[in-house]
Image (tube, rainbow, N blue to C red; front, side):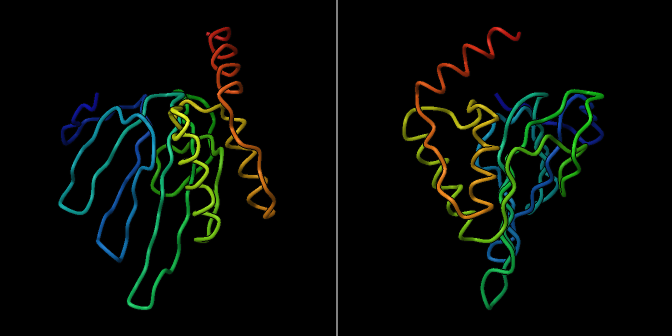
Length: 164
């Protein structure tokens, strides 16, 4: 369930993601993830928050009259308070970057992988972090990656259950 943050709220345990949407100019959006809170700044900008250890994907695209200027997708694990993390534009304090690709062909490949996972009835936010890292390394060198299977997912959920 999404809670709405008020001006001045400082959810220090949450990871904040600043999103902008100016149609056909700057489009930042969340592709998947469980949003814990949201604050609308104006009609083009909002801030969403994610609980520690949650996984989310943020897509950033910018263009002009001539087409796409830049496109990228980042799949990130939100850090726990005090946990070290990598810096990431528009994300405070940062996160554990599981996948980061730039360029529309690679972004499109990752979006296709997300769609394929969700087509199996698996929430992308629940996928094993190591699978996102695997896709990152394979897409970076333009090589095929393994398909995420329901069997792998069940094994990941069992392992995760043992760690808590």
